[in-house]
Length: 400
Image (cartoon, rainbow, N blue to C red; front, side, top):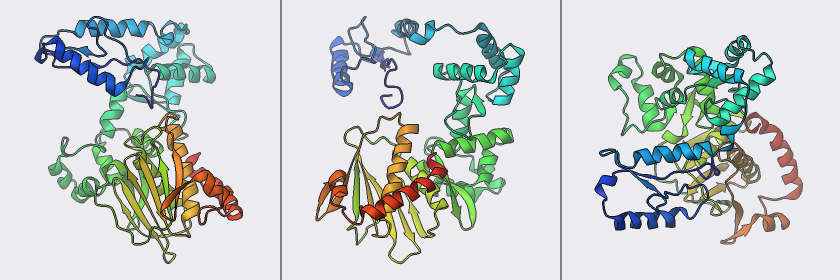
């Protein structure tokens, strides 16, 4: 919440209140929560019970009516509730909801809007932006491949994406149907290796229109949930969150080592996985061919055809480490910096904070000092600036 909606009002709810009847026990829970979250202005206080959370019971319904009243009261106080908008916008929304599109193209929305008096394209965009801010629709204008589709039923999106990205220990696939469809190996590749074939995606989305299937794939690609990858001459997709969690590869030579330290904020789950997707895209565009790769939940290893050329990227708690051969150090470091900035901008609401260090004689040197002394191989000023400019051009394919 702090990353994606830092100013949103938050109600903390505590279920099974019927099993915790003593006020002293509720106060103990309150103390623990206060120590965990701290006194934040966005957390709504429970004035009735003098608590930072709202205890309730699904069994007896105690506390539910007060939670409902509090939500309504807080919602009425929000600025957007009292904002005046044209009545034709509301008529347009009502009509779109009535039709029941889970997802509609921008052209379909414009046609309906035009019939209801919203005739200018700029006004349609303003209307959709407003409804997007309210959370009534999802209009992802930041992504070129997604801006022409509008989502009216977010649950539809969740249902379809969770057919691919799921915890198979809790939500298993129907293996008999998959085997009968000739997709048994595709199923194993997804659940054991994190590799998705388009054939499997099409089968799981059998009831979805082809244009919406393409939209779902592009959505996962642009939000860095999957990445195209060449497996044995066939283009498939890496689903980074489903990659295996194997022991880290041991390197006998890690002299060139860089550390991205996120201790100033934190390194949430999903950042490394998105970084991996971006790096795979970068590799697909690179002229330097790969000889071998190993992809995992918290680390990835790439060996290139140039003798002795490799990189290893790993996450350890709030730290990201880059181990690199001398020939790859500068360019890979610059690429990772650009990718982390992209993730921070598009997925983390600019809330990530980090510092960069470079290993030198057993100690880590801050990036500003490393740059000042032109610490090789990371910083050789003339080559560094040339590679930085060249890389900025090449990264446009996926950092734009």
